[in-house]
Image (cartoon, rainbow, N blue to C red; front, side, top):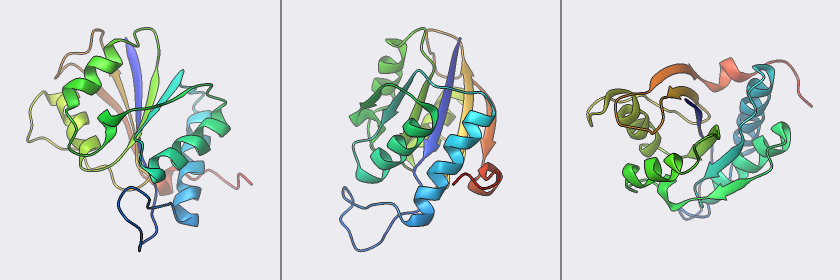
Length: 162
């Protein structure tokens, strides 16, 4: 069984190209909220897989620092429009690990829909800063996951972490 967590990057700044758009201060706080929420739940991913885009990389680094995750792997399979089957293949190679994925919309909601429903038209809305958790039997097969957690950034805020 794999325990998979999925996090969408936080709020981003305008006026940058798509690949270089950084997080706003609030977007960074959203990443902190997610990291401390996972810590409070006693969830410590073995590895973080992140999109190569700046906003996802920064989100992954913030969460990594809070949780003490040793490894962040950059993967093209978390870029919107990439083939979710390649991401499933990559996750299947990680048997025994419980990863956190950091990426973008609409890719993340469509990926989660594939995992829990196995079909294209069901969607889970992953707004900026949302965190989802799934339990998935291994090897991963479309339609076999159970959604166990879906929280928004306001629910993630637990006191002052500074």
